[in-house]
Image 1 (cartoon, rainbow, N blue to C red):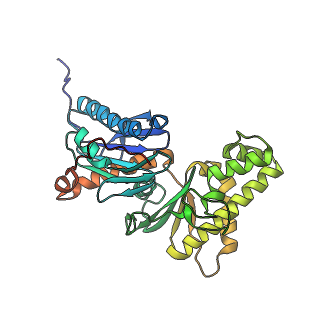
Image 2 (spheres, one colour; image 1 turned 135 degrees about the vertical axis):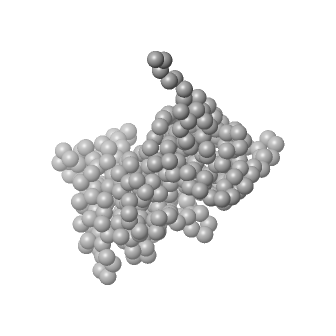
Image 3 (spheres, helix red, strand yellow; image 1 turned 45 degrees about the vertical axis):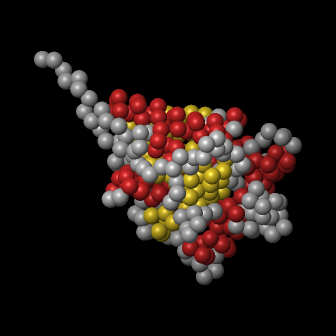
Length: 336
């Protein structure tokens, strides 16, 4: 008896996570499971237009592969990007590390993807959503997801959704001023949290302390584990700064759970034990939340983008609201 070689259609969506150096793209099922994934360089060294082209071409290639492999086209697409995002208009407003401003990314993707519904979101908020549904904050009605990477950003989880704020910038805790008059941040303020407690800040401080210009945060953690007192001092300063910043946020939001992700979370107990102790020393009337590591690692934002794409399909007027495209002005360039 001949075997059945027909392709059985598998519903799926496109999910993209745009980082400073890489675009992670995946096809995901309705349960959030990754069916296929690829990673591609953003090409940011060639300028913002090259980054945009890398994003849309990656999406188009994955769309074609999905239709071939799963017997039907992707039903929708979700994309998560860093910086300031206008979700309503589908515009990537600003991202310093990608060199772009006012990119109509939803419109560009919808046209390249044959008009399927597309939704655009902030990468850390997308990651927070994924952690809330299939990760460390699953079942928690009030949580704060904090990503400690090159910068610091947060996602505020409330009753099953992630709060974007009135102007799309809720959760930017890396720009809470904790040391007035301190180093100038890229945002223009002096003494922001991410100037003291991000992976980039730890790397800078350790490079200066050890006299090795190429040293980074991972090197600091390794030296600290080996008992280097200079590394321990650098790390203690960073944890103290992080606790100061988080105390302000905990006072305002009173979350049940604090989920810590990003590169620095890979330090494990070397981060979580002193951070818990530092916050315990600082709280007065505040309730200390449960502090847990993120569960999804560097896949969180991509998974969140996929979940948001599925959410889009549950909305009655999804096609009406999200396929509508406005062509960019002729010759438009996405330069800062």
